[in-house]
Length: 167
Image (spheres, rainbow, N blue to C red):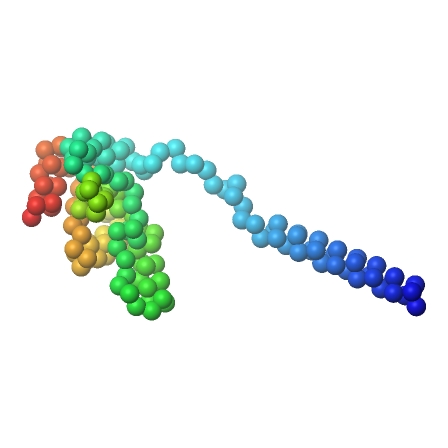
């Protein structure tokens, strides 16, 4: 009787060990492969974005904080409704980002979104995205200014931003 109990305990111990080894192996297989990621060399995707950023800082850096690459979900949120609907509406803006956001220095409230429209904005998908963003910023009362790569003259930028900030 004691001998069969010892054999049973050893059998259960071996079975538990096998289950634990299988569990650990599955956990390692389910880990994401992080080796596919690397640090981007620059924050800005184009030299035009970087040049515009420098112009914005020069012209308005004393009065406004100028934040690059701000996700629209940090600027706009769905109205309170069911969790499912809010999630659905938020997903429409989650992966979209504004090139620049000018915020007042007192309370960090967004005052103006600036989009730099390069040649990719000639594609239908980008145009549809821009149309959606234009409508949503209009509905929420957040002004947006679209500049083209050819519009990087300091005086032109200063005039356009002044018109958007003081309509």
